[in-house]
Length: 416
Ligand SMILES: Nc1ncnc2c1ncn2[C@@H]1O[C@H](COP(=O)(O)OP(=O)(O)O)[C@@H](O)[C@H]1O
Ligand SMILES: [Mg+2]
Image 1 (cartoon, rainbow, N blue to C red):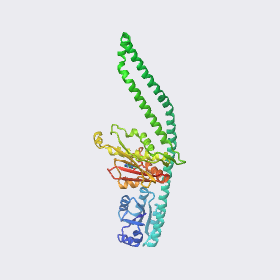
Image 2: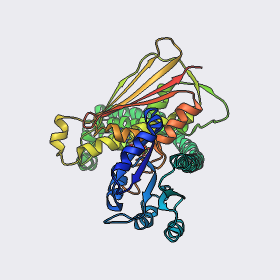
Image 3: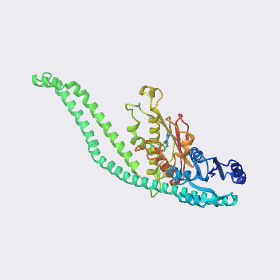
Image 4: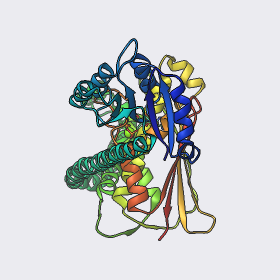
């Protein structure tokens, strides 16, 4: 990785000397220098090049001196370390610089060997800090997600189980109720045939309850109620599939069942509302074998990717009317296939939402990176997804996207 070093000095010829003295490192792409001539310019460069790892600064410069610049650095990035350049006689400034948090100093006129050693030491330190920070974020993300998933998993499995009991009462008795209703209707029809003039009270009641409509409607109602219970039972099955996070052993799993369960859980977000028509879900399922995996974790992967796709579609809908969206509908395409050499399966989840720039794509897998409003995004979805796919399953996660053209996430999971 190339380390970027900001060199701040108002003596212009120094820039050439630096490039010359360190040309080996620069050619090998180990180091890269960015130059500024005073503190104000330096701050602008830090904004322009966020990859800058360290600063080397002179003290006496016009507009903003090195000491003032040093004072500004911590508020921009506390990891940014600085080396100050100063005449040996200038002990006072060197002390002040060190007290302001400078990492080290090099005396002027510059001894380039000493400068190289000092830069190396500083960069090593910076790298170590960055490395530690990455590990910390990783661990934090893992903790949060595993804890959340464990509690959520238990809750969901419990609820699914509790729903099932009363559901069996209804489903079991619906069969009987349907039978009884048919029998009763038949019986009533027999009466009507036998007794064409049943008397005024019965005739009057017939009108009051609109008997003909009732007889027509009742079987329909039974059908709708049955559909309702089927839906509840599907949801309950989906919840149990989703909650199945048997992290101990790999089991043979039907990937399509996992995707369908995730879709079922996200159904309320796919349905039309005041802002948008239904989000079209296009399933291009191939013939997949059962895959040995951790089903709970893969389900989490599908949930994360589909939820992100929905977010991206909602974002792309902003500023468009319901009718306009209808002519260019929101779509999520889910494509599955077996890899050519039969070693793995591929799941592609594609949306026609806002898409991502190349720059954004570089950042989205970092823990806690989000472009969503506070409370909406956690920035953990993709970092966890990558961890689950690559570390837990030895698979691959890729992203194909450009702004305005939608996004496709490609998940590859080895079959064994
Ligand atoms: N399908 C997508 N289309 C466009 N941007 C996406 C998509 N998926 C993820 N992103 C971007 O990646 C960021 C990180 O995603 P994620 O890690 O799931 O966190 P969160 O969804 O909480 O923001 C999102 O904030 C968004 O900017
Ligand atoms: Mg997300």
